[in-house]
Length: 191
Image (cartoon, rainbow, N blue to C red):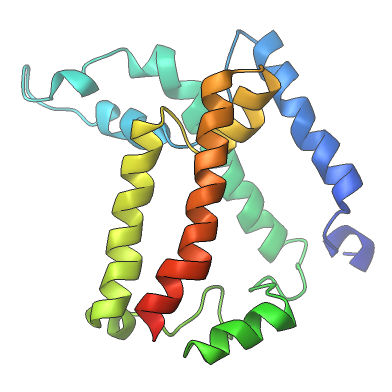
């Protein structure tokens, strides 16, 4: 495969293509782009005896979420194909030298894999800091996405495109939380 195909697309190509997702989904049956609801759809799809599921999971998941499950499967398949068939060069981390230097100052040393191996290994998970970062972070992301009524992609892409004020508040909260985590919480945990 040519290197031009394997290279990341420039922002001025990828951005408008992502932006086209919203009107296409709205035209195609009033769908809203988002990823976080897929876990609910998957849990609702699991067979269970009558009355065993909580009411939150008793709904027509095929009508409400089958298209979204196909979308997330396509995202996963597309990523797999990009790495294996197209041969994306250096499909691992793309962290700037300045960010790597800042993380090294906080004790993160291994940037060889897809994610820093200092935390995202079984040994890293067993450490108190690794547990807080992985398990605590996953809980907060899941809880936050459910509490905010959607994830960053749903609010930032679909919600802002639809001029939804709650999505603007959510996106501002996501960015504030990211800045707080980057400049306050992460340095406290890693020192």
